Image (cartoon, rainbow, N blue to C red; front, side):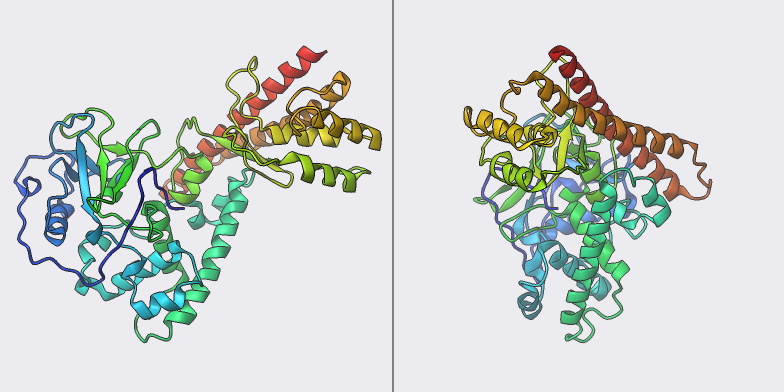
Length: 456
């Protein structure tokens, strides 16, 4: 997934063999006493600025945090100040591929896979690569905790979540992309020599967790991609087409040596774990993907009604995404509220399921036609059927809550091997994920109980 939080028009390009001969001196290269400084990266910003031919930043330096490499304030930073500006000509995009390779892969794989190939090719070149100072500083295999790297035992910890299946799908897609890419690149002797599926998966994860959207499909932005995520940050990577730079503006004041953050987006723990390899202890953007199993005697008529009424064209941002009988729910903030967090499509689905005769289905569609065609715009006139419909949902939520509680209890009892640091880390991430999704389910259940009680 590529993220872009800018409303500006985006354009990103990169010249494969560009190298600046300009000798550039910036305040970022002046000697300073810096806390947290990563000594292995002291030459990175000077290298980037020489390559760009312009100053990239005098406000930050690369340091070490609890989450790995990050950016820290080199001096006091005020809200609204530009933290860094990275020119397009020192960003890595699919345009960095050799023209013949890019042409052959054009319609075969997506932008993530193409950019992963760029990384692999440059890493294969080694120290002779113009991008070596950048690619050598990227996380190494084993440093990324995306669920695509989890073992079968580790994945069992999140089987209760839809993330389990999403991880399987992602791994399958990566394998397909690798097979396609290898067939193409095997024609170019040496360019992909010795690259394994494991190598490609690692490069794919680097791109998925660090690249930002652009008019070229995606780009890796050196220095900017050292910024870590903070859930309440309002700072993003923005693209300025006129100046041909990507930039980050401080959303609040920072004291010197304080870690600087941006937002990767308003994502659930499921997305954060799959794409970035971390999960927050409390994520206000948490959501749960659920399915409602059903078996009845009127499947054809119910299917037709759902197809015709359940998903009307709408610009309503509060209408959640859904697919078939699978729905995404978010936390319901108050049991006395209107159930925001429970999508209308889910409640409509339950109303259709609760019907036991053709007449009830016809009455349901008639009621919908009297409003705007939506099956869940207003409560059903028949209160007993309205209660029955919501009790279907309540029963499903209660079942899921029981299953989540059992999974969490089992997970809390697991004793990790002291020497297995990865397992302990991923166990904690799994607990963050499951506890967050359980919180969403419990909030929805509480709202449904209250709603049904008010109807009695």
